[in-house]
Image: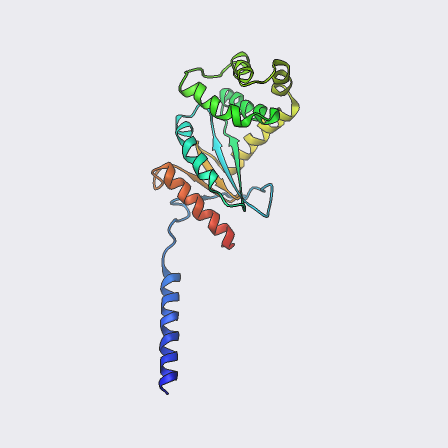
Length: 213
């Protein structure tokens, strides 16, 4: 009888803890800390959680975000695919998106990406002409002819168009923003006061996707 009583008490305690845990509110709330993308966007690899940063080289907030997101990226587990995607609302932003994809086509993203940010925000060279951009690439070791071919290539032009479509599909209204697995969008503002908090919400959503919830 005593054994049965102890068993029942233990069961009640476990169930009480479980109920309390499940009743606790989520740390981050849809519509308050992140938005659900109306029509989910297909990701490149369904076996990974895809996280996309939408950025613009001319954005001072994106420039300030770079050291933070680089540090965050270094610690990502193997089941996460991190992708950068330029945002664009005007001709200058389209040209800056072209910088990103030309660098990618030439295999110099690691060299050009940070340099483009530095050129705009520290050197006040706003990279708004083909010649200014070519000079940057050549300075980073790219041959002029190679740059010319990549800069006007169909593959780079197509990549820019896809990024523009992706941004609209995500419903991006400002940069930097981050999309998680094509389902959720996180931006700084309102109840997300800092970029550090934005990354915490992204981590939360990554775990939500892992859990299938």
